[in-house]
Image (spheres, rainbow, N blue to C red):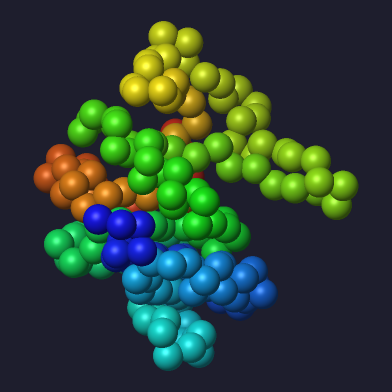
Amino acid sequence: MSRSDLKILVGIANFGTKNQWYLRRLLHEYRRMPHKVDLCVFSNIPKSLGEDVEVCMGLPEKDPWSLPHAHKKVFADRADRYDLFIYSEDDTLITREAVDAFMEVSAVLPDTRIAGFIRYELDGDGRRSYSTIHSHFHWVPDSVQTYGHFRTARLTNEHSGCYMATRRQLHRAVASGGYLIAPSEGRYDKLC
């Protein structure tokens, strides 16, 4: 399958109206991709984001912090219709280059591994600030593995503000029984 034949379902959590400018930036980036991309925004209120955007309204629970979990049922229900599934919060930009890199790495990883991302922000001078590696989070030294020409390691911060999964990976996650669980708090707050 060529990269332009890739069918992608994107789910973006967008509560209220706070991040509308940034949400529109994300939608613009996805629309520019050479892939067949279906866009779904999960919201607590109606939104007009264009004819090509499905707005799924409603919270999984009364708690507004449950919104980031709304995409899971939709992804699971559509697991056979797409090659790749992308979830992000409305402030996390995923580029074509990130999609291409994910697919390249996924081709060599074993079925038990899903590639993650190191998120960063750029300040006005172009300096990077790594938002996922802070406080007490760190790399797990004995998790280093090599697959093909890629070296991987696990980061102790398992925050899920964004992820990608291939059809096969999503099927595996759903079959595990741990994907379609109710929102809960533990090591991370309910948003994560």
